[in-house]
Amino acid sequence: MNDPFPPSVWERRFERIVEIVPYLTLATSLVISLASPEQPPGGVLRTLALTALALAWILGSRTLLPAAVRGRRVAVTAHFLGVLATAALLAFHDPIFIIYCTSGFFLAAHLAPSKWTFAAVAATSFVLYGSTLDWSQATIQLVAFYLAIIVVQTVAIGGGSIAGIKIEDRQRAYRKAVSDLQTALEENADLHAQLLAQAHEAGILDERQRMAREIHDTLAQGLTGIITQLRAAQRVEDAETHVALALDLARESLTEARRSVAALQPHQLDDAHLPEAMTTLARNWARSTGVDLHVEVTGDRIPLSPAIEVTLFRVAQEALTNVAKHAGATRAGLTLSYAGAVVLLDIRDDGTGIRDSGGRGFGLSSMRQRLRGVGGSLEIESTPGEGTAVSATVPALQGTPR
Image (tube, rainbow, N blue to C red):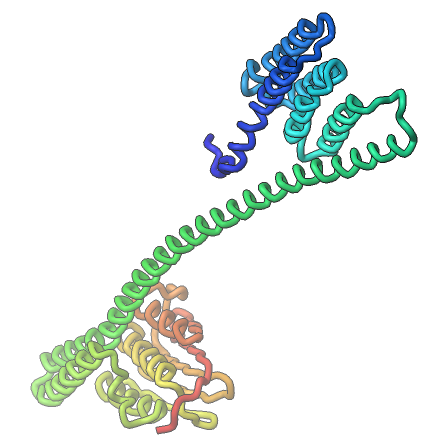
């Protein structure tokens, strides 16, 4: 798996420098040592032999190792200790090889960030200064001076190495956080697009359901009434009354169809409040069905919001249609009750009742959907042969007085 945050340019350059520093410092020290005119007997051979040993150690413990082994802590530690040991031998042989000793400071970076970084820097400092100090003439003050330098150097170099790694780690964390944030923003953008699409689809579905309810509550009911009147006209000789009622229902249904397309409220609510519209609805329904319908309004009347009034009107309209179509009732009652925080609508009949009290028909489902849309609820109580009671409850949300 590729590293999403590879080493920076600075890190890669520093790694290359650390790899070649031992070779450069060793070669520089060797050239200067061989160029020195003052060489003791056999000094050149010892210099070449120790240099060859140091070179072989660098190659064998680092360069020639596989990359997977080279990065292990054991391999890094062994490589550092070998370089430091060969540097100490060369420096005690010829002080000019303290140049090669300085490579220990660079190799200490391989041990960072840990306490061993400070130990590696301190060990390198001891070898560096210990090889240049004339211990036969050393004084306490001189040793203390060198120790102070070693401490300061250890803290400065070791701390700087660790601080650099910590800063780089923090930058990696920042880059990862930025990358995660960008990914989250992209995911949120995709999610937002999905939600918009779902909301659009839900809006289309809601509009289809609304139009279905409007058609069911207006055209379907009006056509049902027209068919009822025309059938009645077929059974009697004087059919003018039934034909007139059918024409009135046809005109009213046409008006409702036009208003439904324009998403307007029922025309009965155009110039009247809900109680008056209910009374008109009940009167027309009783005249067209021949069922005795008693209407009652209780409580302190308040102007309700248009959505509440339309919902209650449509629920009453649907419930009365169900009574006319299915109940076979001779009497019915409609009660509109203003009860403080809620408004109640009760419609009762003495018909045959409902066998399926769950009410899964389109009309009952339409009523429930309408009521849920305004925060209301619907309850149905029915006993076969003893009639049905439909109760709707909605919050009494007030509207602007007309």
